[in-house]
Length: 253
Image (tube, rainbow, N blue to C red):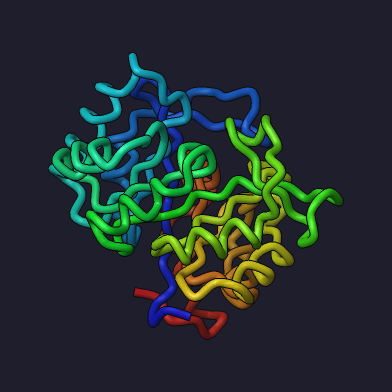
């Protein structure tokens, strides 16, 4: 486990606004991304993750503007995912203030993209974003999905994560589609399985609903915890989550 546990708010952005749903469905407006990022920075967030959930060509410029506006007032690492298909996309995002990029569907379609990004920018700039579902079709019991969990691939979650690390992914963002937005807690079995095969940091995502959900995710093997709606709705603050981790004997910044 890394020295200090990171707490990362996630902003799912569509057409310049933050949105949130349950199991990636029924998205609703949750606010202005720059305002929310600034609030979380003030609360002590360790990083901010932006996911462009409708990464079509017409929304790309909006996302660059959002990243740049955020980077100008938020002085913690920014990870941006969604619609990244080439190393030039990474270069442009970094030019607008992104520190890391999250890659998902494009890497599944063309795994060499991971190696290209890692070779050009370093593993520390590359996060493999994994949207995973439970499945009896794969050896691990978890299958990789694309398109916000709507399309199942034939990839076993652990096998794909292993290949991605070998290709240069510097972190794994492990999102449980089954748990996403349910607020019933992280998928601890999935986190533990990822920890067992991963030589790089694991970020747990999907299912946070209460302050007591975070420490078990770290104890299951995550290096960082990521959440969205509990922060956007004001149900929890970053500080409250960090206090709960400290109380559980875990190191936080």
